[in-house]
Image 1 (spheres, rainbow, N blue to C red):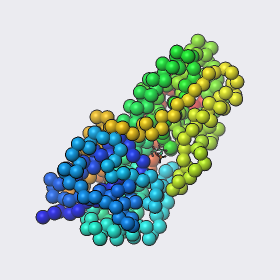
Image 2: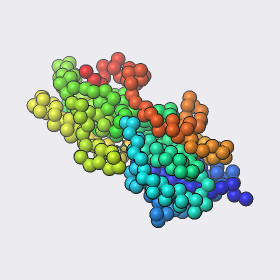
Image 3: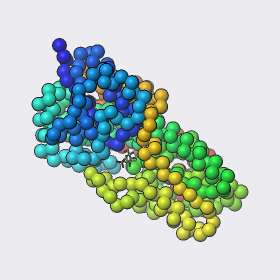
Image 4: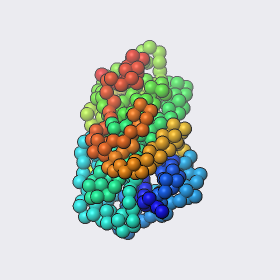
Length: 361
Ligand code: F6P
């Protein structure tokens, strides 16, 4: 006899490892006696008209190494519950009721939500409508304080390091300043960790303000020492003169970032006309796409298995979390409460500064 029917959805931006979580849930969960349905396009699939497919162990064979999500995903959409820098948007009650009613009608006893801060914030609100929810922490930004690591981050970091390694050769061959833009809306984990690993000369993150004049002076100083090239890694959410840079579009209560290196290049050129030959590279969704690396595959699998353990142990309103190499279950409330930001106690931050990397004035 079935122990229950578990719905799975992948919400928010895609990242490497989503399919590995889905596969682990279905394979392990089936062995425990659960049945599965996968909702398409994140929360959109739970809303009218419901859009889902049955998932059996056969359906998830050979997908764990693939990027993206077989269930598709929607970033924002009707279930937008942004957490971001502390703001929680309340999902309209009728939308929550619609989702809860549809889940009940489909016989879903539990829902596994694979998502970042916004999606898990939505999961918390849905669970307050009586839906039994378990969250799995996903985001390349690695910005959830309630877990040591989100899956997707490691792969994104590796991609960014490879990008930095590659632009280094052009920077040195042409004595250029190369600006490399990586993702990271509110936090600079990709920029900092990839920047240190990839030998960046400057790392600009949302957490630390820098002045343009100090950055220009730093670049001049390098030039005076005979180092004509510089590689500067910039998180998309970093601020120039206290301002984030985006295209003005706001989706689901969040600004659409991207393009900070275009602006930074223009401002350096204006502040130091003709002094530097500058180019920029925005790696964008390249860091979110493609196959997960070994670390993310294993973490995603462990999270998928843990989500089913949580359900089997009768837990509800929890997120699976990694702490010191072990799985823990934390309440969804705690999971979305706080973002993990870079601060001056961070090892990579301290190491970078001691190695002469420019982070702030
Ligand atoms: O939250 C993860 C993230 O990769 C952010 O760093 C970035 O701002 C956002 O997703 C981009 O989302 P989209 O692909 O919807 O533009």
